[in-house]
Amino acid sequence: MDSELRCDEEGSITIVTITLTIVILFTTVIAILFSQLVVGQRHTQSAADASAIAGANALALNADTACLLAAQIALRNQSRMTNCVVGNTDVRVWISDSIDVAGHIVELTAQARAGAN
Image (tube, rainbow, N blue to C red; front, side, top):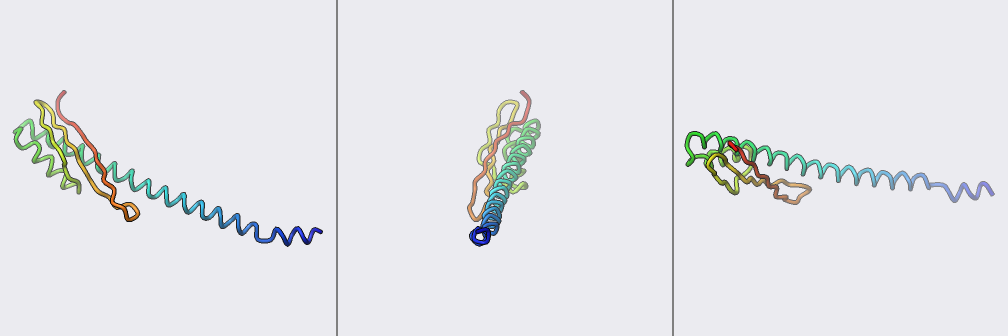
């Protein structure tokens, strides 16, 4: 009787091992894809912050060049500025960036404001 049970249970560890391996691989792939999105969003936000600061610095000298300088800084950060609003004492920018995540292009956006209150 014991030998019959052992024959029926042979290979069950292999099935469990294969199933766990698939689950671990799937989880790892999801974690990597999520990490790409997080890193991309952080990069886009950094580009927005740098552009807004550059625009605010230019605003102190010449209001006409604030958005132009902000756009140049965005391009240097491999992003593009989609909008820029110059106030009396501040500059607000909107930045967009595209990243490839597993063969799909994902559009990331960020905004930032810099200047005096």
